[in-house]
Length: 396
Image (tube, rainbow, N blue to C red):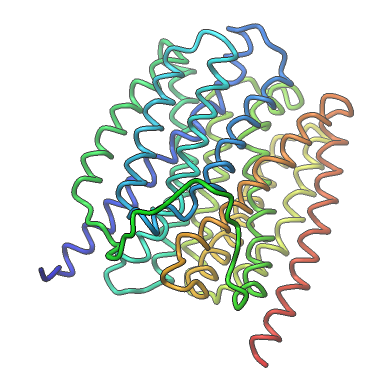
């Protein structure tokens, strides 16, 4: 059957929309953590544990099922992610204690880890002009928009509508229903499916691409630390350190970060992947330094400047990393290599963020974020050195 350009464009847009909807569910709880603290009577540092449970779910899913869609097809794996996301939303709707919150976050993490690789690979395969660069821009922009929409929606509903911890999930289940209808219209892009897949730890990469993959992985690791900092801890920091307690403000600040990241990705679409990646690695330490200064002086304007710089850095390293993966990945291993990139991303999103959360309880926000800023400045500097070496190797 001949597939027209118009049909491919429709399918491409539908898959991008599905990715946005699923990822929106990942960060819906962000502005609600302070509400849950009041409802269930737990200490703010327990929020770090709940956030860590989500991150564990993402990493387990990526590490053990990252290449599942290369064997089973993109649609079945994305469909499974939709089911898990709906189950997570239902658990949040019924949550009556911290244990249920942890279970809901774990299921949400499993869903997010399951969807990112097949959806990103599928976008590369459905792009109407077979333009890998445009597919990377759309995939990364859809990721940022989806991750930012969740806290924006929950922040405003919890501030201005009844049932602050319930209504948003009822609305979200409706969006997931629409996403399921859209998935039924999207064609399968994996022709040779052997349907033989078992959950096993598999993080191997083809030797030929490792030199170029490493700086991309280090870049997204660093960028996603900034995302995790905002998603997991910033709403509490805003209330406790800057004394801004509005749920809507917390959601809007997180959305600002993701919105700036998506804008940066669009503006960098014509840059070579190494230039975008290098630019982001240069801006990221500056963003963290400004955020540290904002906490040191309890300055919301400085914090917003740091947010914009952080979003710019995240957008650049993410589009640079994803474009690198699209360029270097063997076709038959695209989902596996994409999954490896997201494993690095969500490792940065989780492990150091949990460490900062724990350290902030013992040392205070300023000391904890200062230590993290110094550590990631070193990582970014090393990644730039590796990127320069990979460029020289490629030229040779």
